[in-house]
Every structure is written in structure tokens, then in C-alpha cells.
Image (spheres, rainbow, N blue to C red):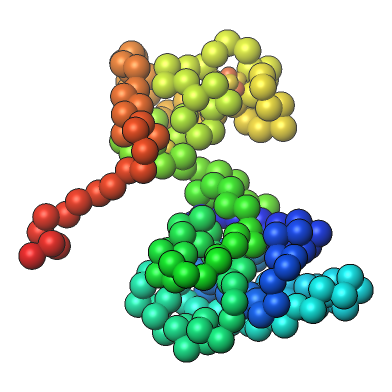
Length: 222
Ligand code: SF4
Ligand code: SF4
């Protein structure tokens, strides 16, 4: 899932100052699961903004709505009637959600209420960890399903770097060395031979080269 964190209330107040009718728009998918932008957080942030408005005499009128997905026009459309009633939208979607809503409402300011952090999973209660950097050319098969780009602090495709102590990463001693994990995993599934292969430098053109990436599926364009 996409993992995000709520922006702090003082930062949101700064972003919203000067506006009156503000819709706090939640998203019921990834950001709800990571407890950043779902219905519950819409309610918490809205309450906090109302208090800030009273204290600072900002004259905010705060509305609340959560849709199932902000990155999908079908769901954005369902919010049209409510959105029309507000001057600005504070989106609690991820960065894609904020931009999808902004594209749909070209005449209305849409502000981000979250900091979108990474693609990851919930590892334990209250702890999310990054697992994928969306590099555009997945090599997980080569490393037993453990991503060296995301989980090795030096993003090494031919590791380890030689700096690990016991099983700890040299750069991030709070984490296991990714290459220790890769070794254990490949050993466990009988694929240690994979480590004999020297990986060629990664082609980063599939990553953030030359503006936003697009995927075109011709079979879906007829
Ligand atoms: S290799 Fe790339 S696509 Fe695959 S998990 Fe790692 S960052 Fe994500
Ligand atoms: S110690 Fe391991 S995880 Fe850390 S940078 Fe070196 S190879 Fe990568």
C-alpha cells in the first residue's frame, strides 16, 4: 500500500489561511489503512482545524467527506455535489489522489493534507516499513523476494557492501542488513546459486527519468 503521514495542524492552518469554506476530503483505501487519511482522520483533522479557527479567528467553515478512492475519477465524481459547495479542498489522499482531484476541479484549489512517504506494509502495530521504490523494472525474483533497492541502504544489486556488523546494516544499525536477509532467504528456498551471478548496473530509465512515467495498455484503449 501507499503509506503516508498526516501533516501537522499548524502547517495545515498555514496552508489554509485566507480560505473560508474548506472540505476535508478523505480517501478510504491505502491512506485509511495506514491511519493517515481515512474517515477517522478526516474527523480528527476537521475538529483540530475548527479549534484552530476559533482560537485564531480564522473563520473556517469545515466540511467532511470520505470517498473510496481519490485516485479514481469514478469515485471523485460521486463527491461532485459536495465539492461544489466548498471553496477549497484539503485532500487526505496520497500525492496521486491530490492531483487526480485537482485535475478534475481545475478552478478549485486542492491542497495536500498528507505527506506521502512510500510503498510499504504494516510490519507490526503502528509500524510501517518501505518495501518497494517503484523502480519500474522489478528484480525481486533474483533476490528471493527481498528488494535490495529499497532495503539495502546503498541500493546495491551486488552485495553485501562489507560494512555490516553481525546481521546489522552499516548505515542503519537499527535494521538487518538486507543482504543478510537475501542470503538467508535464498538459502531457505535452495537458490543460493543466484548470488554467483554479477548483476549488471540497473537501467534507471524506468525510474524517474524525463518526467512522469506512463503505462499504455493498447488492449484497453479500443
Ligand atoms: S525491484 Fe523495483 S519494483 Fe521490485 S520491489 Fe524493488 S523497487 Fe519495487
Ligand atoms: S550493510 Fe547491508 S544493507 Fe547496509 S548498506 Fe551494506 S549491504 Fe546494504
